[in-house]
View: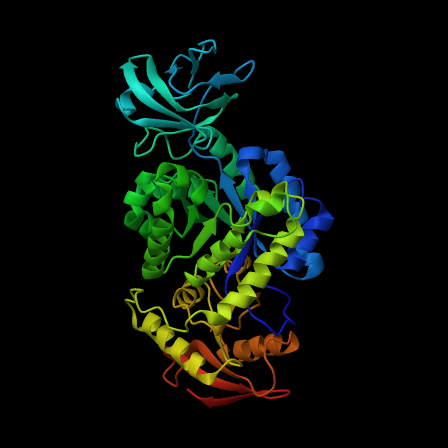
Length: 487
Protein backbone atom coordinates (compact mmCIF):
# COMPACT_ATOMS: atom_id res chain seq x y z
CA UNK A 1 0.00 0.00 0.00
CA UNK A 2 0.95 3.65 -0.30
CA UNK A 3 1.56 6.38 2.21
CA UNK A 4 -0.81 6.73 5.16
CA UNK A 5 -1.99 10.11 3.93
CA UNK A 6 -3.45 8.68 0.73
CA UNK A 7 -7.18 8.85 0.08
CA UNK A 8 -7.31 5.58 -1.82
CA UNK A 9 -6.77 2.22 -0.20
CA UNK A 10 -5.47 -0.83 -2.04
CA UNK A 11 -6.39 -4.34 -1.02
CA UNK A 12 -4.02 -6.17 -3.39
CA UNK A 13 -0.39 -6.17 -2.28
CA UNK A 14 2.70 -5.82 -4.50
CA UNK A 15 5.78 -8.04 -4.30
CA UNK A 16 8.94 -6.81 -6.05
CA UNK A 17 12.15 -8.77 -6.54
CA UNK A 18 15.42 -7.07 -5.66
CA UNK A 19 18.22 -7.07 -8.24
CA UNK A 20 20.83 -4.90 -9.95
CA UNK A 21 18.16 -2.50 -11.21
CA UNK A 22 16.80 -1.81 -7.73
CA UNK A 23 19.22 -2.81 -4.96
CA UNK A 24 20.90 0.54 -4.36
CA UNK A 25 19.77 2.39 -1.20
CA UNK A 26 18.15 5.10 -3.32
CA UNK A 27 16.24 2.65 -5.49
CA UNK A 28 15.07 0.61 -2.49
CA UNK A 29 13.64 3.80 -0.99
CA UNK A 30 12.00 4.63 -4.30
CA UNK A 31 10.43 1.15 -4.51
CA UNK A 32 9.03 1.41 -1.00
CA UNK A 33 7.65 4.88 -1.71
CA UNK A 34 6.15 3.58 -4.95
CA UNK A 35 4.01 1.10 -3.02
CA UNK A 36 5.88 -2.21 -2.74
CA UNK A 37 4.71 -4.23 0.29
CA UNK A 38 7.05 -7.24 0.14
CA UNK A 39 10.62 -7.30 -1.16
CA UNK A 40 11.64 -10.66 -2.61
CA UNK A 41 15.23 -11.88 -2.52
CA UNK A 42 15.88 -14.64 -5.06
CA UNK A 43 18.58 -16.96 -3.71
CA UNK A 44 19.12 -18.56 -7.11
CA UNK A 45 21.34 -15.57 -7.83
CA UNK A 46 22.46 -14.45 -4.36
CA UNK A 47 24.98 -15.23 -1.62
CA UNK A 48 24.53 -14.97 2.18
CA UNK A 49 26.82 -11.93 2.19
CA UNK A 50 24.71 -10.18 -0.46
CA UNK A 51 21.58 -10.92 1.57
CA UNK A 52 22.99 -9.44 4.78
CA UNK A 53 23.95 -6.20 3.03
CA UNK A 54 20.61 -5.85 1.21
CA UNK A 55 18.58 -6.65 4.32
CA UNK A 56 20.32 -3.81 6.12
CA UNK A 57 19.57 -1.49 3.20
CA UNK A 58 15.89 -2.48 3.19
CA UNK A 59 15.44 -1.96 6.94
CA UNK A 60 17.30 1.36 6.83
CA UNK A 61 15.28 2.59 3.86
CA UNK A 62 12.01 1.57 5.54
CA UNK A 63 12.92 3.52 8.67
CA UNK A 64 13.96 6.59 6.69
CA UNK A 65 10.71 6.78 4.68
CA UNK A 66 8.59 5.60 7.66
CA UNK A 67 6.95 2.84 5.66
CA UNK A 68 7.84 -0.71 6.58
CA UNK A 69 7.95 -3.63 4.19
CA UNK A 70 8.54 -7.33 4.73
CA UNK A 71 11.26 -9.45 3.13
CA UNK A 72 10.70 -12.81 1.46
CA UNK A 73 13.65 -15.12 0.83
CA UNK A 74 12.97 -17.36 -2.17
CA UNK A 75 15.24 -20.40 -1.81
CA UNK A 76 16.35 -22.21 -4.92
CA UNK A 77 15.12 -25.68 -3.96
CA UNK A 78 15.87 -28.97 -5.72
CA UNK A 79 16.63 -28.70 -9.42
CA UNK A 80 17.64 -31.08 -12.19
CA UNK A 81 20.18 -29.46 -14.51
CA UNK A 82 22.36 -30.43 -17.42
CA UNK A 83 26.13 -30.32 -17.01
CA UNK A 84 28.58 -27.71 -18.14
CA UNK A 85 29.38 -27.49 -21.84
CA UNK A 86 32.42 -25.83 -23.42
CA UNK A 87 30.28 -24.37 -26.19
CA UNK A 88 26.58 -24.50 -27.02
CA UNK A 89 25.37 -27.75 -28.58
CA UNK A 90 22.83 -27.53 -31.39
CA UNK A 91 19.98 -30.00 -31.02
CA UNK A 92 18.26 -30.78 -34.33
CA UNK A 93 14.68 -32.14 -34.52
CA UNK A 94 14.71 -35.87 -35.19
CA UNK A 95 18.25 -36.38 -33.90
CA UNK A 96 19.16 -38.68 -31.02
CA UNK A 97 20.44 -37.13 -27.80
CA UNK A 98 21.25 -38.71 -24.42
CA UNK A 99 21.40 -37.62 -20.79
CA UNK A 100 24.10 -39.42 -18.77
CA UNK A 101 23.99 -39.86 -14.99
CA UNK A 102 27.80 -39.95 -14.70
CA UNK A 103 28.81 -36.37 -13.87
CA UNK A 104 32.22 -36.94 -15.53
CA UNK A 105 30.63 -37.50 -18.95
CA UNK A 106 32.20 -35.20 -21.53
CA UNK A 107 29.58 -33.12 -23.37
CA UNK A 108 29.18 -33.77 -27.08
CA UNK A 109 26.59 -33.78 -29.83
CA UNK A 110 25.60 -37.25 -28.59
CA UNK A 111 24.68 -36.14 -25.05
CA UNK A 112 25.48 -34.38 -21.79
CA UNK A 113 25.64 -35.20 -18.09
CA UNK A 114 22.79 -34.46 -15.65
CA UNK A 115 22.99 -33.91 -11.90
CA UNK A 116 20.18 -36.41 -11.12
CA UNK A 117 21.26 -40.06 -10.70
CA UNK A 118 17.62 -41.28 -10.56
CA UNK A 119 16.72 -40.02 -14.04
CA UNK A 120 16.61 -43.53 -15.62
CA UNK A 121 14.33 -44.73 -12.80
CA UNK A 122 11.88 -41.84 -13.06
CA UNK A 123 11.25 -41.50 -16.80
CA UNK A 124 9.27 -43.73 -19.14
CA UNK A 125 9.62 -44.44 -22.85
CA UNK A 126 7.43 -42.07 -24.82
CA UNK A 127 7.39 -39.38 -22.11
CA UNK A 128 8.73 -35.86 -22.59
CA UNK A 129 11.83 -34.25 -21.13
CA UNK A 130 11.81 -30.45 -21.29
CA UNK A 131 14.99 -28.39 -21.18
CA UNK A 132 15.67 -24.67 -20.73
CA UNK A 133 12.16 -23.56 -19.65
CA UNK A 134 10.56 -25.87 -22.22
CA UNK A 135 12.29 -24.25 -25.20
CA UNK A 136 13.87 -27.61 -26.04
CA UNK A 137 11.65 -30.71 -26.01
CA UNK A 138 12.73 -34.34 -26.25
CA UNK A 139 10.90 -37.69 -26.20
CA UNK A 140 12.38 -40.68 -24.35
CA UNK A 141 13.21 -43.57 -26.73
CA UNK A 142 15.46 -45.80 -24.61
CA UNK A 143 16.39 -46.20 -20.95
CA UNK A 144 19.64 -47.72 -19.62
CA UNK A 145 20.97 -47.79 -16.04
CA UNK A 146 23.39 -44.94 -16.74
CA UNK A 147 21.66 -42.93 -19.45
CA UNK A 148 18.36 -41.89 -21.02
CA UNK A 149 18.27 -41.65 -24.81
CA UNK A 150 15.79 -39.30 -26.47
CA UNK A 151 14.64 -38.05 -29.83
CA UNK A 152 14.74 -34.28 -30.24
CA UNK A 153 11.22 -32.98 -30.89
CA UNK A 154 11.87 -29.24 -30.70
CA UNK A 155 15.52 -28.33 -31.07
CA UNK A 156 17.65 -25.39 -30.11
CA UNK A 157 20.99 -24.33 -28.67
CA UNK A 158 21.82 -26.16 -25.42
CA UNK A 159 24.05 -24.17 -23.10
CA UNK A 160 25.58 -24.99 -19.71
CA UNK A 161 23.57 -26.02 -16.66
CA UNK A 162 20.13 -25.73 -18.23
CA UNK A 163 17.09 -26.56 -16.13
CA UNK A 164 15.26 -29.84 -16.85
CA UNK A 165 11.54 -30.43 -16.28
CA UNK A 166 10.02 -33.90 -16.07
CA UNK A 167 6.25 -33.27 -16.38
CA UNK A 168 4.18 -35.48 -14.10
CA UNK A 169 7.19 -37.07 -12.37
CA UNK A 170 7.55 -36.98 -8.57
CA UNK A 171 11.32 -36.62 -8.49
CA UNK A 172 13.35 -38.14 -5.67
CA UNK A 173 14.94 -34.93 -4.48
CA UNK A 174 14.92 -33.44 -0.97
CA UNK A 175 12.69 -30.43 -0.30
CA UNK A 176 15.73 -28.52 1.02
CA UNK A 177 19.23 -28.60 -0.43
CA UNK A 178 22.41 -27.86 1.54
CA UNK A 179 22.62 -24.50 -0.24
CA UNK A 180 19.07 -23.73 0.87
CA UNK A 181 19.97 -24.47 4.48
CA UNK A 182 23.00 -22.18 4.39
CA UNK A 183 20.95 -19.43 2.78
CA UNK A 184 18.16 -19.81 5.33
CA UNK A 185 20.62 -19.67 8.23
CA UNK A 186 21.97 -16.39 6.87
CA UNK A 187 18.43 -15.12 6.35
CA UNK A 188 17.37 -16.07 9.87
CA UNK A 189 20.28 -14.11 11.27
CA UNK A 190 19.13 -11.06 9.32
CA UNK A 191 15.47 -11.49 10.32
CA UNK A 192 13.72 -12.51 7.09
CA UNK A 193 9.93 -12.47 7.37
CA UNK A 194 8.90 -15.08 4.77
CA UNK A 195 10.50 -18.08 3.10
CA UNK A 196 9.28 -19.15 -0.34
CA UNK A 197 10.02 -22.85 -0.86
CA UNK A 198 10.48 -23.90 -4.47
CA UNK A 199 8.93 -27.01 -6.06
CA UNK A 200 6.71 -27.96 -3.12
CA UNK A 201 5.27 -31.37 -3.96
CA UNK A 202 3.48 -32.36 -0.75
CA UNK A 203 2.56 -31.09 2.70
CA UNK A 204 5.50 -32.99 4.20
CA UNK A 205 7.88 -30.62 2.37
CA UNK A 206 6.42 -27.74 4.38
CA UNK A 207 6.75 -29.73 7.62
CA UNK A 208 10.44 -30.40 6.88
CA UNK A 209 11.12 -26.71 6.29
CA UNK A 210 9.25 -25.72 9.44
CA UNK A 211 11.38 -28.08 11.52
CA UNK A 212 14.52 -26.55 10.05
CA UNK A 213 13.34 -22.97 10.61
CA UNK A 214 12.54 -23.81 14.23
CA UNK A 215 16.01 -25.30 14.65
CA UNK A 216 17.69 -22.05 13.54
CA UNK A 217 15.35 -19.84 15.57
CA UNK A 218 13.48 -18.30 12.65
CA UNK A 219 9.84 -17.20 12.91
CA UNK A 220 9.55 -16.72 9.15
CA UNK A 221 6.23 -17.75 7.63
CA UNK A 222 6.35 -20.29 4.80
CA UNK A 223 5.08 -19.66 1.27
CA UNK A 224 4.71 -22.81 -0.85
CA UNK A 225 5.58 -22.34 -4.52
CA UNK A 226 3.39 -24.51 -6.74
CA UNK A 227 5.51 -25.30 -9.79
CA UNK A 228 4.75 -28.83 -10.96
CA UNK A 229 2.02 -31.42 -11.39
CA UNK A 230 2.72 -33.03 -8.02
CA UNK A 231 2.10 -29.71 -6.28
CA UNK A 232 -1.18 -29.28 -8.18
CA UNK A 233 -2.31 -32.83 -7.34
CA UNK A 234 -1.54 -32.35 -3.64
CA UNK A 235 -2.75 -28.76 -3.39
CA UNK A 236 -5.26 -29.41 -0.59
CA UNK A 237 -2.61 -31.02 1.61
CA UNK A 238 -0.09 -28.27 0.80
CA UNK A 239 -2.47 -25.36 1.45
CA UNK A 240 -3.44 -26.78 4.84
CA UNK A 241 0.23 -27.20 5.83
CA UNK A 242 1.62 -23.87 4.61
CA UNK A 243 1.22 -20.24 5.72
CA UNK A 244 0.78 -18.97 2.16
CA UNK A 245 1.02 -20.03 -1.48
CA UNK A 246 2.69 -18.72 -4.62
CA UNK A 247 1.36 -19.69 -8.04
CA UNK A 248 4.77 -19.83 -9.74
CA UNK A 249 3.64 -19.81 -13.34
CA UNK A 250 7.09 -20.11 -14.93
CA UNK A 251 7.79 -23.79 -14.28
CA UNK A 252 4.11 -24.54 -13.73
CA UNK A 253 3.34 -23.38 -17.26
CA UNK A 254 5.91 -25.87 -18.53
CA UNK A 255 4.80 -28.77 -16.34
CA UNK A 256 1.13 -28.61 -17.31
CA UNK A 257 -0.56 -27.93 -20.67
CA UNK A 258 -0.42 -24.16 -21.12
CA UNK A 259 -4.15 -23.90 -21.84
CA UNK A 260 -4.86 -25.36 -18.40
CA UNK A 261 -2.74 -22.78 -16.54
CA UNK A 262 -5.57 -20.22 -16.03
CA UNK A 263 -7.83 -22.99 -14.73
CA UNK A 264 -5.18 -24.25 -12.30
CA UNK A 265 -4.42 -20.70 -11.16
CA UNK A 266 -8.08 -20.11 -10.35
CA UNK A 267 -8.38 -23.46 -8.55
CA UNK A 268 -5.35 -22.69 -6.36
CA UNK A 269 -6.68 -19.21 -5.50
CA UNK A 270 -10.08 -20.70 -4.64
CA UNK A 271 -8.51 -23.39 -2.44
CA UNK A 272 -6.53 -20.73 -0.58
CA UNK A 273 -9.73 -18.73 -0.04
CA UNK A 274 -11.44 -21.79 1.46
CA UNK A 275 -8.54 -22.43 3.83
CA UNK A 276 -7.98 -18.74 4.61
CA UNK A 277 -4.41 -18.74 3.32
CA UNK A 278 -2.90 -15.80 1.38
CA UNK A 279 -1.80 -16.38 -2.21
CA UNK A 280 0.60 -14.65 -4.64
CA UNK A 281 0.30 -14.72 -8.43
CA UNK A 282 3.80 -14.64 -9.94
CA UNK A 283 5.75 -14.72 -13.20
CA UNK A 284 5.34 -12.81 -16.47
CA UNK A 285 2.74 -10.35 -15.17
CA UNK A 286 4.54 -7.41 -16.80
CA UNK A 287 7.37 -9.27 -18.53
CA UNK A 288 7.50 -6.91 -21.53
CA UNK A 289 8.35 -4.02 -19.19
CA UNK A 290 11.83 -5.46 -18.76
CA UNK A 291 12.48 -3.70 -22.07
CA UNK A 292 9.40 -1.52 -22.65
CA UNK A 293 8.12 1.49 -20.66
CA UNK A 294 4.52 0.33 -21.12
CA UNK A 295 2.90 -3.11 -20.72
CA UNK A 296 1.14 -5.10 -23.42
CA UNK A 297 -2.65 -5.19 -23.46
CA UNK A 298 -2.51 -8.91 -22.64
CA UNK A 299 -0.40 -8.19 -19.54
CA UNK A 300 -2.89 -5.57 -18.35
CA UNK A 301 -5.65 -8.17 -18.68
CA UNK A 302 -3.53 -10.78 -16.86
CA UNK A 303 -2.89 -8.48 -13.88
CA UNK A 304 -6.57 -7.47 -13.88
CA UNK A 305 -7.59 -11.12 -13.79
CA UNK A 306 -5.40 -11.78 -10.74
CA UNK A 307 -7.03 -8.81 -8.98
CA UNK A 308 -10.53 -9.99 -9.93
CA UNK A 309 -9.68 -13.46 -8.60
CA UNK A 310 -8.78 -11.59 -5.40
CA UNK A 311 -5.27 -12.90 -5.00
CA UNK A 312 -3.59 -11.34 -1.97
CA UNK A 313 -0.55 -10.20 -3.91
CA UNK A 314 0.88 -9.89 -7.41
CA UNK A 315 4.60 -10.21 -8.04
CA UNK A 316 7.26 -8.60 -10.20
CA UNK A 317 10.41 -10.59 -11.02
CA UNK A 318 12.65 -9.62 -13.94
CA UNK A 319 10.76 -6.34 -14.22
CA UNK A 320 12.45 -5.08 -11.03
CA UNK A 321 15.67 -7.14 -10.98
CA UNK A 322 17.22 -6.37 -14.36
CA UNK A 323 14.49 -4.43 -16.13
CA UNK A 324 14.94 -0.97 -17.60
CA UNK A 325 11.72 0.34 -16.03
CA UNK A 326 11.43 -1.05 -12.48
CA UNK A 327 9.64 1.92 -10.90
CA UNK A 328 7.37 2.32 -13.89
CA UNK A 329 6.33 -1.34 -13.61
CA UNK A 330 5.38 -0.80 -9.96
CA UNK A 331 3.34 2.26 -10.95
CA UNK A 332 1.59 0.24 -13.65
CA UNK A 333 0.65 -2.33 -11.00
CA UNK A 334 -0.73 0.44 -8.81
CA UNK A 335 -2.74 1.94 -11.65
CA UNK A 336 -4.30 -1.40 -12.57
CA UNK A 337 -5.08 -2.22 -8.93
CA UNK A 338 -6.74 1.14 -8.33
CA UNK A 339 -8.76 0.87 -11.53
CA UNK A 340 -9.90 -2.75 -11.21
CA UNK A 341 -10.51 -3.17 -7.47
CA UNK A 342 -13.58 -0.88 -7.35
CA UNK A 343 -15.20 -3.07 -10.03
CA UNK A 344 -14.78 -6.32 -8.06
CA UNK A 345 -18.03 -7.51 -6.39
CA UNK A 346 -18.29 -6.77 -2.67
CA UNK A 347 -19.45 -10.29 -1.88
CA UNK A 348 -17.94 -11.67 1.34
CA UNK A 349 -16.05 -14.96 1.10
CA UNK A 350 -18.55 -17.56 2.33
CA UNK A 351 -16.40 -20.53 1.34
CA UNK A 352 -13.87 -20.13 4.15
CA UNK A 353 -14.32 -22.59 7.01
CA UNK A 354 -14.74 -20.69 10.31
CA UNK A 355 -14.68 -23.07 13.26
CA UNK A 356 -14.71 -20.82 16.32
CA UNK A 357 -17.27 -18.28 17.58
CA UNK A 358 -14.58 -15.59 17.45
CA UNK A 359 -13.82 -16.26 13.78
CA UNK A 360 -17.54 -16.15 12.99
CA UNK A 361 -17.71 -12.82 14.78
CA UNK A 362 -15.09 -11.56 12.32
CA UNK A 363 -17.41 -12.37 9.42
CA UNK A 364 -20.16 -10.35 11.12
CA UNK A 365 -17.70 -7.48 11.49
CA UNK A 366 -17.03 -7.44 7.74
CA UNK A 367 -20.74 -7.27 6.90
CA UNK A 368 -21.20 -4.46 9.42
CA UNK A 369 -18.22 -2.49 8.12
CA UNK A 370 -19.49 -2.76 4.55
CA UNK A 371 -22.92 -1.54 5.66
CA UNK A 372 -21.30 1.45 7.40
CA UNK A 373 -19.78 2.59 4.10
CA UNK A 374 -16.45 3.66 2.62
CA UNK A 375 -15.39 5.81 5.56
CA UNK A 376 -15.60 2.79 7.84
CA UNK A 377 -13.01 0.12 8.59
CA UNK A 378 -12.18 -2.66 11.02
CA UNK A 379 -9.74 -2.16 13.88
CA UNK A 380 -8.21 -5.29 15.43
CA UNK A 381 -5.50 -6.03 17.96
CA UNK A 382 -3.51 -9.20 17.43
CA UNK A 383 -0.58 -11.03 18.95
CA UNK A 384 -0.69 -14.08 16.67
CA UNK A 385 -1.86 -12.58 13.37
CA UNK A 386 -4.98 -14.79 13.37
CA UNK A 387 -7.43 -11.88 13.32
CA UNK A 388 -5.67 -10.03 10.51
CA UNK A 389 -5.26 -13.10 8.31
CA UNK A 390 -8.88 -14.27 8.76
CA UNK A 391 -10.30 -10.80 8.09
CA UNK A 392 -8.21 -10.63 4.93
CA UNK A 393 -9.45 -14.04 3.80
CA UNK A 394 -13.06 -12.87 4.15
CA UNK A 395 -12.37 -10.46 1.25
CA UNK A 396 -14.58 -7.58 2.37
CA UNK A 397 -13.94 -5.34 -0.62
CA UNK A 398 -14.01 -1.67 0.30
CA UNK A 399 -13.31 -2.34 3.98
CA UNK A 400 -10.01 -1.16 5.42
CA UNK A 401 -8.46 -3.53 7.97
CA UNK A 402 -6.25 -1.81 10.55
CA UNK A 403 -4.28 -4.49 12.40
CA UNK A 404 -2.36 -3.35 15.48
CA UNK A 405 0.26 -5.55 17.11
CA UNK A 406 3.03 -5.14 19.66
CA UNK A 407 5.18 -7.81 17.95
CA UNK A 408 7.67 -6.42 15.41
CA UNK A 409 8.04 -9.71 13.48
CA UNK A 410 4.28 -10.14 13.17
CA UNK A 411 3.94 -6.46 12.24
CA UNK A 412 5.97 -7.04 9.07
CA UNK A 413 4.26 -10.36 8.32
CA UNK A 414 0.91 -8.57 8.29
CA UNK A 415 2.01 -6.69 5.17
CA UNK A 416 1.10 -9.79 3.12
CA UNK A 417 -2.64 -10.49 3.60
CA UNK A 418 -5.20 -8.78 1.37
CA UNK A 419 -6.43 -5.38 2.56
CA UNK A 420 -4.54 -5.37 5.88
CA UNK A 421 -2.63 -2.27 6.96
CA UNK A 422 -0.42 -3.17 9.96
CA UNK A 423 0.66 -0.91 12.81
CA UNK A 424 3.26 -1.52 15.53
CA UNK A 425 2.28 -0.18 18.95
CA UNK A 426 2.71 -1.19 22.62
CA UNK A 427 -0.41 -2.71 24.23
CA UNK A 428 -1.70 -1.87 27.72
CA UNK A 429 -2.53 -5.36 28.97
CA UNK A 430 -4.39 -4.15 32.07
CA UNK A 431 -6.16 -1.30 30.31
CA UNK A 432 -7.72 -2.37 26.97
CA UNK A 433 -9.50 0.97 26.62
CA UNK A 434 -6.16 2.81 26.72
CA UNK A 435 -4.88 0.54 23.92
CA UNK A 436 -7.95 1.33 21.81
CA UNK A 437 -7.60 5.07 22.41
CA UNK A 438 -3.89 4.96 21.46
CA UNK A 439 -4.71 3.08 18.25
CA UNK A 440 -7.43 5.58 17.36
CA UNK A 441 -4.98 8.41 17.92
CA UNK A 442 -2.45 6.80 15.57
CA UNK A 443 -5.09 6.38 12.84
CA UNK A 444 -6.29 9.94 13.33
CA UNK A 445 -2.78 11.47 13.38
CA UNK A 446 -1.74 9.60 10.23
CA UNK A 447 -4.99 10.56 8.45
CA UNK A 448 -6.24 7.01 8.04
CA UNK A 449 -9.56 8.06 9.56
CA UNK A 450 -11.43 11.35 9.44
CA UNK A 451 -13.70 13.10 11.85
CA UNK A 452 -17.08 11.39 11.71
CA UNK A 453 -15.70 8.05 10.54
CA UNK A 454 -17.22 4.96 12.14
CA UNK A 455 -15.01 1.98 12.89
CA UNK A 456 -15.84 -1.60 13.85
CA UNK A 457 -13.51 -2.48 16.72
CA UNK A 458 -12.76 -6.07 17.72
CA UNK A 459 -11.13 -6.31 21.11
CA UNK A 460 -11.18 -7.92 24.53
CA UNK A 461 -13.28 -6.49 27.33
CA UNK A 462 -12.75 -7.05 31.05
CA UNK A 463 -16.10 -7.66 32.80
CA UNK A 464 -16.92 -6.66 36.36
CA UNK A 465 -16.35 -10.31 37.27
CA UNK A 466 -12.79 -10.02 35.95
CA UNK A 467 -13.58 -12.21 32.97
CA UNK A 468 -12.09 -11.41 29.57
CA UNK A 469 -14.62 -11.64 26.75
CA UNK A 470 -14.46 -10.93 23.01
CA UNK A 471 -16.37 -7.87 21.88
CA UNK A 472 -17.44 -6.18 18.66
CA UNK A 473 -17.81 -2.43 19.13
CA UNK A 474 -18.87 0.48 16.94
CA UNK A 475 -16.89 3.66 17.52
CA UNK A 476 -17.25 7.09 15.96
CA UNK A 477 -14.23 9.35 15.48
CA UNK A 478 -14.53 12.91 16.73
CA UNK A 479 -11.99 15.68 16.30
CA UNK A 480 -10.00 15.05 19.45
CA UNK A 481 -11.59 12.04 21.09
CA UNK A 482 -13.29 8.75 20.39
CA UNK A 483 -16.88 8.19 21.51
CA UNK A 484 -18.10 4.69 22.41
CA UNK A 485 -21.47 4.16 20.71
CA UNK A 486 -22.26 0.59 21.59
CA UNK A 487 -20.80 -2.81 22.30
